[in-house]
Image 1 (cartoon, rainbow, N blue to C red):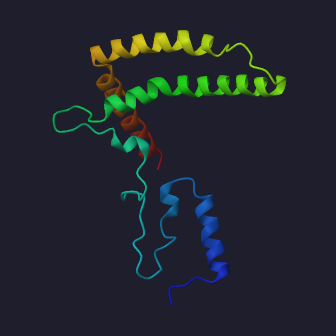
Image 2: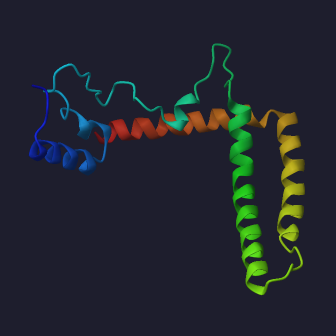
Image 3: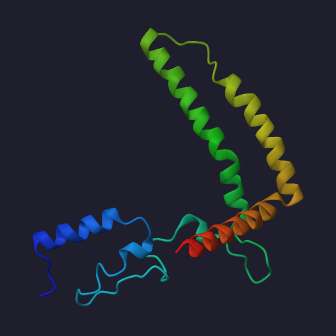
Amino acid sequence: MGRLDLTEYDERLSRTYAAKTFGDLDGILDDLPDTVAPTAGSQLMVPRRHDSLVAGPDGRFPNATARWLAHTWDGYFATVAIVVAIWAVLCLMTAEWLYFWPAWVAGPWGAVLLVSTLGGLASGEPQKWAAERAREQKRKMAKEDDED
């Protein structure tokens, strides 16, 4: 009792993978005993990254600074990692230490980002950024609700 045979499991799994919205997942677990099936309007088991952009009681976004810093610097770190990896592969292929040209990518860009980060922190940019992102999320969710 409460166990799925292989055919029924495969059907449910296919429906799950074919789902395009959370609403498409409604009903997949409804007939199973001792389960609580999440619906489209219920809280997700795995929170989305953007769920934490909710203003606190004082109107400020509690984790705005950390998220703004990650948003500001993530492209820099990814790019620097790629160019350093390219440089390392070239060093391995030539079997010698080559001129460290990634410094010309990382140095100037990092300096500009550092100055803009310090200026942004001084001017309250993280809270402005978080408020704008929260507005965008509300518009997107309202648009999705209108489409349903």
